[in-house]
Each structure stands twice: as C-alpha cells, then as structure tokens.
Image (cartoon, rainbow, N blue to C red):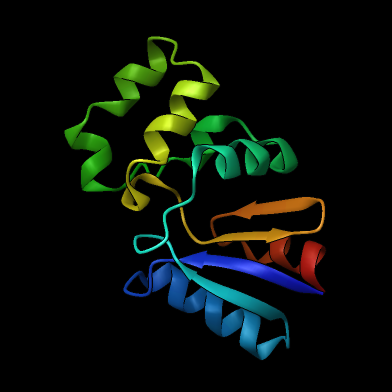
Length: 119
C-alpha cells in the first residue's frame, strides 16, 4: 500500500512523521503542501474519508489562522464548503501532516492512530 503524504518540509512534526514512515517501511508519495496546495475538492473528499470535524483540518497554531480570525469565522457558522474553499487558498492554513490512503485520512501526527491505520 502506498499512501499520499502531504507535508511542509520545514515543519518539525512533519519531519518526525516522515521519519516514522521511513522507519516502519511505509511507502508514500511526498507532496509539499505549499507548492501543491490541496484543492477544495480534495479537501472535501479527505474530510469525508476522515470522519473528523472540518475544524481538525485547520492549522490552528499557524500565524495565518490567527491573522485571518478563522476561529471566529468557524464559531460564526462557516459551512463545510466555505471551509474547503478557504483551506484551498493557502497550504499554511491546512493541518499537517496529512496521510491519505485507501478509505482513510490521518490528520496530524498521532503515533497510535498511524500504527492502527498503517501497520
């Protein structure tokens, strides 16, 4: 099984996650989240496959998230489509790393979740 690994190479969590994939022999296609930002359609599909709330796809610790006041917008009731459209404008808004596999999507790096899905 080969998965899609969406990352920002300078991100320390992404580096740790990539090392984990390599150490566990997981095959992946690497994708730079800023150079090849996910589209709204991809994000919608990944959201559906993940089973997670759309908020989990936002990089809440990023400067851009704070600058744009996204928490207030989410609290005010942004639709999922509005969220996908916004996330598709800038890879730095998207929570990373993302792992996309057959029928599943992992958001962020949580070892137990990764072990359950990938090993």
